[in-house]
Length: 154
Image (tube, rainbow, N blue to C red; front, top):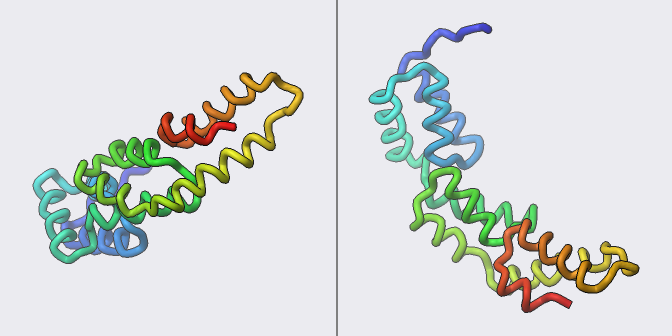
């Protein structure tokens, strides 16, 4: 395995600026990246503080963009988005802001669209209860709330 030589804190900070400037990142992603550059804990914390001060790193902005993107592009529900943000160690405050930024009408419309499309894909020869269960499992896997799923089931 090839080992990289450690970067100086200034070089690592410059690379981190580019890394954050390319795409919104969460604190934990940037922290991991800084450690791969060979920085020590105190240097990583200092670099993170600098990135936050320079507005390269903003957890709230990341959370809102992440939630909106996953909802629009992958049709994820709020449960799954919350779970994924928690995996990225995003604060509860930022998670709530991000979920609140999702338009309620779009959310309902997307859930309805997914329900209709999946119901049409399921084998009409199967028993109706089995089809309903499969539809329910699909929507739960997508991250929608069970009470909302029950409300839209055919």
